[in-house]
Image (tube, rainbow, N blue to C red; front, side, top):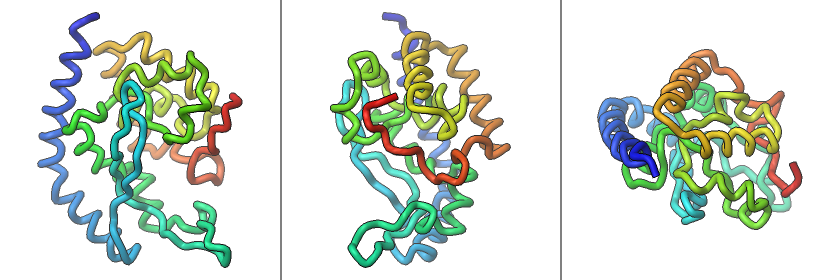
Length: 202
C-alpha cells in the first residue's frame, strides 16, 4: 500500500474545511434562494454506499420539486426541475454541501460517484471494486462524459481510477473538472436531467 491514500485523506479534509469557510456566504445565499423557490428544505439527503459499501448520508442542494401526478408518483425529472435548480446544477453549486461529507470522511474530492443503494445487488464482482476507494464529488467518469456516457463506460473509468489512483491523476481530474464546470460541458445527456437507472446490464 502506498502512502498516497493517507496523504489524500488528510488533504481532502484540509481543503474541504478551507473551502467550506470560503464558500459559506455563497452556500447560504443558494440555500435561501432554493428554500424560497422550492417552498421547503433546500437540501437533498439520501443514503448512498461509500467505501467498502458502507452506507452514509449524502447531502446536496435540492434542485427539483416533489410534485406528483394523480397517482402519487413523482413527475418526470424535467417537470420537477426548477429554473433556479437548473442553474444550480449547471454551475455544479448543488455539490457544495458535499464538503461536509468530505469533512466527515465519507467522501473524497475525487473518486467514483456514489450511486444508489438499490444498485448494489446488480453489480458484477468486477464492478463492485469501485467501492474499494472513497466516492468522490468528481471523478474520471465525470470528466469523460458524465451523464452522456453509458454505464459500461462509466464503470470502466471508475475502475481505471481505482487501479491507477495517484497525485498526478487527481490533479489532472481537478483541472478537467474546472474546465468542464466553467464550460458547463456534459451536464446532461441530451434532454435528460439525470442518468438512466442502472438495471444490471451494461
